[in-house]
Length: 189
Image (tube, rainbow, N blue to C red; front, side, top):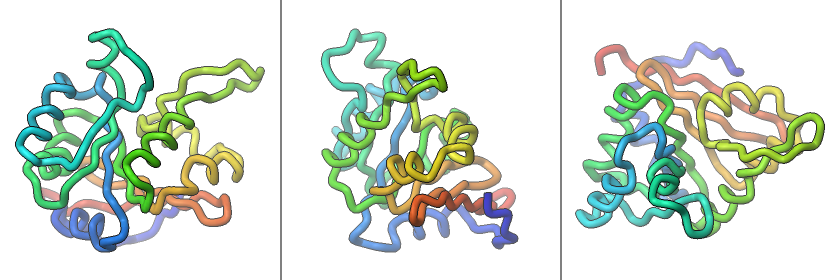
């Protein structure tokens, strides 16, 4: 983890930095079990043109209960009430709701990548379902992951961002080497 002494930034400055490169799309991977009524919130945001598109990360037909708790991929718009709510309020209301991703991948490309990363392996080789977009999982596993696994997960991503009320953690990789940087938020901003 890069323990730099970065100056605290306001939420508006962090939001502006997310969309600084017009060639990079900003997505959210949101955990349905952390945000109540997520499918309804997404449908309303989509109906109001507050997001570009969204889809469940889990493939196939799901039961209504599983669909409510599943992770969702959402293409965010820089100027929307849904994006502002997600970046500014959700971190306080729904701790570790998911992650932001900056990438040049298309929506379908990122959905495919996200699905490919859903399976992990225990040390004994047993496969497990891995909700990799959970910040608690990322904070635990990313620093321990070998370079090839870091490359596999973060390779097509410019930046993966874990939001919070006091800091954002920005993750990226360079040549299979994990880069994690804490970016403090201005107090009371």
